[in-house]
Image (cartoon, rainbow, N blue to C red; front, top):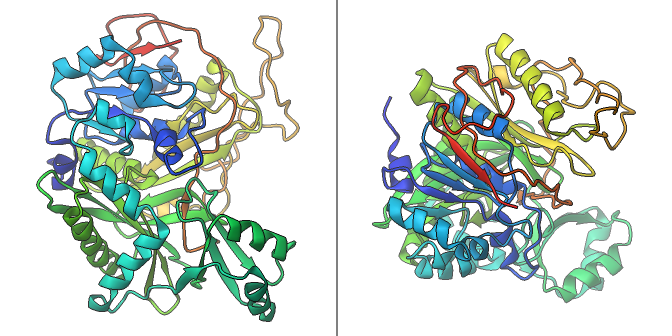
Length: 497
């Protein structure tokens, strides 16, 4: 199976340099850059095969081996631990050695999202950055939706207006009506809130949001089965729009928690309607100078119409899912359904060795049930509220949709928050074997009509290791212990301190 056209449009048909700067991208919209940036680990998956991956957080050798084994990657250079404060592009720009390696490879440099800082290492972003700042605005995106909707009868744009008088809005909500409050540049789950007359402390809350210049958007009552829909595409260097696909997002309240992509996930007519409108949005973005990855998010209503809610002009959580799906299709043949879960509580903080053992057990359980499990965010396992992110692939949508909740937490619900790592320490609890193959609840289908990508900042775990490891060759992706070796299967890694 060949590389899909959208993949070649994204990376130019050659292995690119991937820069994980998710928090830096979010921070340019007024809230400041905040680390640590775990979510940028997802950038590593966003290429058919990267030449080099640059990550803000330190990653362990076992994870690089695990990813390389599952996806069949070789000769991928990984530099991690570059920016504990999440200011990735500045950190890379201050490293002449990295800049020389990037220039020597002549690869396309693809950040998670365009920023003023990314222009120093990824030339050509100036026009794209203007479009980012315009259409990441919920107000401007809504205006574009309204301008395009007449040509798309399945699309119904929710009404939107500035939050004027908090008192007047509070009176309107007394009858049980719900609305969505949106900050113009809300990101990371912080800029969207569903309110009604029953919301505690409603009037002071509305006053605070009014001071921030919030928008009020009509609440779209979603379908019970296919509520939160996303469409992803790429605007190529020549301005041509290449559709990637539509997926079903899993949203908890207003926070994005994962996606399912692949054949049979969405009804065909719903996916076609999302693709038709999303491609029209892409053509408008291209005309305004944007180049790169984008998505359009929708709420699918019970009547079968689509309410567009926002545009994301950057890589996204679904982008990682689509790339993983395409890689497995190409490597293993046939078609795969991929489901991601971006925040799965572990129940106990796990140091590297315990996490490696935990993941090996999850991989084994999943393999025994005909699935493939891939850890996508390994860096938050030692946070105060530790979690893991994963993708699971199988041949059917049913195989990744268990009838009950999945859990990756440790066996004892009362497990200690901190696990000591000295030789005399108590061994951390083994993961419970209660799940079909994955961690925690994957389906949170309540939602706002505006799915926010969550980065969940938390304190960083220090890593003073320095060395080179390589990708293992185990075809089922079982992570092997990290080892200090320069040659294995060709994936090299350096960890900066």
